[in-house]
Image (cartoon, rainbow, N blue to C red):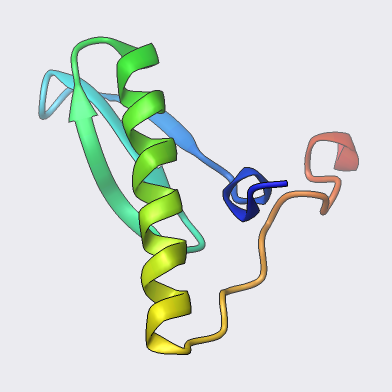
Length: 75
């Protein structure tokens, strides 16, 4: 399994920018943007994978993923 699938990926509409903005809170903010939310998500997944590879190349430990923390069921 790809390590990137464990990281939360957010796609939000930005009124200020007039487009969708994608981020991965554990790894970076404001990673990509565009007018099609599906294309932004695809690009965001690619950036997450590239960021994880950079962590690996630099010998850095990856931040703990937020997924699996049951945030959705916490209400």
